[in-house]
Length: 305
Image (cartoon, rainbow, N blue to C red; front, side):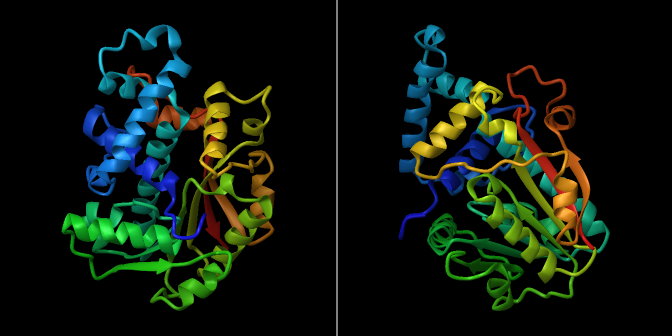
């Protein structure tokens, strides 16, 4: 990330959640607060580019769409990212509810971006200490947006700014009020594909080392086929191209058939590993509006041993 520049991907993901909450029924994930965090200027730019992109995605039908709103709705369904964002967020909060019932008392959100959990789920917040870990620039911008929205920061929401090029996750959490003896759930969404394989494993290992046995790690990943042009779905190929254009290239995928063994090497037991078919059945079954699971996205729930 460039100095003094917040993550553009984080803003775009927040826009996707906001649009879905405001315009789609039924909702896969209802982030009814996300629109407050997306600046008006950013929203206008995103919507302009989405409407223009329709001319490339669906040139034959683009001219027939009556207005920008209709074009954006079409693009929300055509792109891979929105479906990825909604389903992984819902999966994580579903998993968190289960884990909280089993004694988890800390929720650590890595790469939190514009996540609204701490303001949107007060009934869950009562049971948890929430730690948002993110790049200092992105986190500072989010806190500015929170202040502008007039939201009061809950006492058990803790912001942990960290530049991973200069500081480790363990060091960052150690200087916060994180309790290494308390059962925790780590959420790590939309990040693994931007890192090298070694960086992903280093981060997972760090989580396993700083959390007590029985803690959980939820993360999503792309399979290796997503990075092979002859095997990747077209919309995923486009997503990779767009990420490259934004200066935040996606570079790493994992083989779902061997990830169990890879995680076990640093004391993580794979509790659940949802395939695209599993995700489709759990979160998109019966939908007729054009949303469907990303062809190469997987959800992993690992437990610290």
